[in-house]
Length: 103
Image (cartoon, rainbow, N blue to C red; front, side):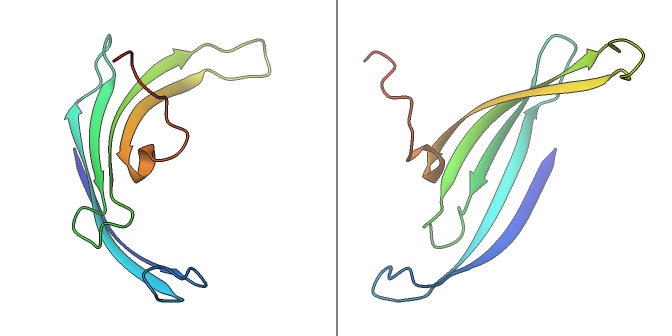
């Protein structure tokens, strides 16, 4: 229901903030808000780089639903199919955005 990680990144030849090489440390956490149920997906909220320098900071909300898949013929076995969709803000939402929702 809770996951956390620490990341240390080094980027060379970037020339960011007057430094040729840039090193960043960040702390990420994700929290499952709702557990998956037969009719509803699992909902997870995540925060990236919220306790670091903030260069890669972002927030996201994601939904994942698992479906049982049948076997198709004698060559495949039944299994699970997971579908995931999400929205991201901050660094995750800074490129290729979906634009305005009508306002």
